[in-house]
Amino acid sequence: MVEYAIEIDNLVKKFGDFTAVNGVTLHIKKGEIFGLLGPNGAGKSTTINMLLGLIPPTSGNILVDGIDMQKNPDKAKQEIGVVTQETVVEPELTAEENLMIFGRLHHIPASELQKDIDFALELSDLTDFRNKYAGTFSGGMKRRLETAKALMHAPQLLLLDEPTTGLDIQNRTQIWNLLRQINKRDNVTILLTTQYLEEADQLCNRIGIIDHGKLVALGTPAELRQKIGMSAVVEVAAAKDYLDKIASAFKKVGLDPQVLTNKVIASGGNAPVDKVDKLIKALTLNKIPIHGISMHEPTIDDIFLKLTGSSTRDQTGADNSKAAALMRRGR
Ligand SMILES: Nc1ncnc2c1ncn2[C@@H]1O[C@H](COP(=O)(O)OP(=O)(O)OP(=O)(O)O)[C@@H](O)[C@H]1O
Ligand SMILES: [Mg+2]
Image (cartoon, rainbow, N blue to C red; front, side, top):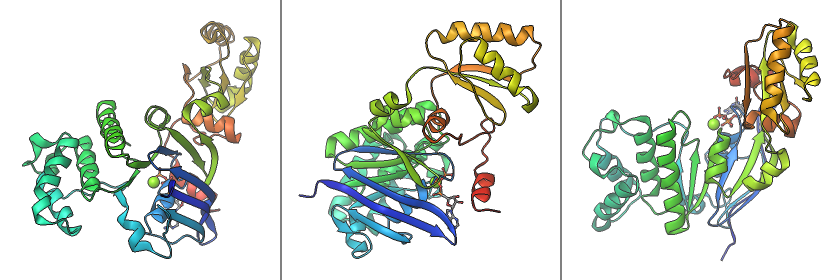
């Protein structure tokens, strides 16, 4: 039996002279829940699309359950269930009809189809909604229906591209539970992409962090946490002109500042609350106007900063993926 569900070696994808995926090597064992974590434009969907055989790699190899995706795509694809980044349920059909059509497309014998549908509905907690139109479903319910759909042909490998982006925490937790159940019950290998550190942390056995098409870190959540240190991050946002003064205030209270485009951050170390308290006093005393001050657990952005020396979203949380992508492409 093949040990790995997925073996990716030196995978590269270029669009013109822009490199979206830049030499990714990743081996995912059967039964793992693996999270590919990265910001907008990191190369997550491009990687998934190559794994699905939807776009050809520029170079590199992909094996799915030992089957070469380029040489034997149809066979490799049979192993995979997929939930794409865009929601693709049929709104004019009921939950049950959505599953039925998908089951027929996958040539599930009529004698087994109803049983499979019942099981998929139960697993995704949608049994009570089987006769409701998918168009009336909440975002979370649509995502669960899609996951149910992906499981209809009993794949050994499930790929999900940002299954919970935009969902509230309750819906996110429901999807996590669904994935855990599938993994535990049938030992289905799960590869999901996410922008949420806590999702990767809570759900995944292993995490790969991808940025600018490169894997910048790989390990269990515990290994990554150890690598970055789990101390709190102290952050002060302000207009550009004040950042140097703020950095001086950080130093005065014993924090080691890093100045970004519109904020100063530091790893909190011991007694971060005391330091924040002193910092507020120092900033007030010097009448430095700020936009915000916070202390938080390291976010995906903080981890990137630590691992790559540059921030992924160096501009207060705004989704600047398109601008960043264009910048990277030299426009
Ligand atoms: N068909 C394409 N042609 C040109 N550039 C592309 C194409 N597909 C993706 N890209 C670029 O490749 C980079 C990676 O895109 P990708 O969709 O893989 O990112 P992602 O990690 O999935 O981001 P998101 O979280 O926003 O979905 C981006 O800069 C994107 O603009
Ligand atoms: Mg994507």
